Image (cartoon, helix red, strand yellow):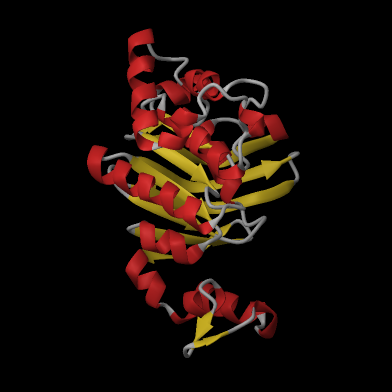
Length: 262
């Protein structure tokens, strides 16, 4: 479905944020993109969504394709109409609007009847959102806001849902609810998901395939089960080595870079 080929992205025509990145998100799959802060994960999602211009970013080489057709260069509205929807980091709700008004904003490309059906779908998935539908979204808890943000994205009936750090700052019980919903959407309706996460353990339990990005480059990829068993991933992303908890501060960064990029 989604294919990035040798993608290079610059900010302010000087700062290289992404270098020679290629990745595939097959239709009906969940693919995880893992990495630390500043690795380039969010930049990739913004490139796919067509919103790099908001931060003076631009694609200088490479391609982005959806079902074999070029996606880069399309307007954000056109990209949404093609079925690609992003849930941004930090939720980015309209804080002064009610929950239901936020949801309806997500269905702006759809008919009134389709929007009504979309609301019922979201309310069935997240009963807590239905309970809060008349409340001002800015007063919701972080977990409730994340549910609304995902619900707003689903209102557009996406083919590809991109999630940027959906677990960030949330209580474990809320995270479980959200990831159960993601898995159900994938299994029950075949929704394709590109999941950006720092929580590697959670992401690799959810996804079928994963990519690890560092300093704007993909340094490792493979089936999620294989990545979970990889010694380097266990040590540096899952925090275990030989059954003991390890600290990133105890490890020389260049050593794993040398292993992964050799």
